[in-house]
Length: 210
Image (cartoon, rainbow, N blue to C red; front, side):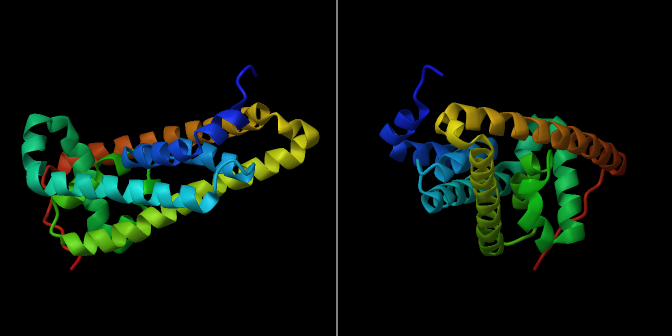
């Protein structure tokens, strides 16, 4: 590779934490996995990375929760195609309560609507904030350490070649890309099936986790 990724990350190390915060604020695990791989090479500090991902993910979903509470019904009137996804998220909240709040970030499709939908439910802000903080921590740790362990694994397999960080990232990119492709494909099918089921019901009961 013509670009020295080691030098690039070392030069802009602090900005990678900022990028992680912004990226996770908007949702997305791919960058966190790659950053975790960089941490395995000593280019980033794993715990600073986890903190940035944790705070970013928590803050983003708190914002979506607030939007759902204040403008949720107006948004559904303006964008009716969101109704199916919101109904699925509310149905899962109704069935699994705390378990859903702790795990929705890992559920393809549903996670895009979850915080907005929970803002429209009867769950209180303090309760959601507490559970969301725990959930964001679980998510940030999971994907940061996945990236870290992948980096360690590829370094062990490549040996001296591992000094070319581009090869490690290429291997991680291919591995993560294949895994996410199948996960998203399977998740999309399930999500679309649940949306179709919810559209038949048409009515979503109030949800309370108090």
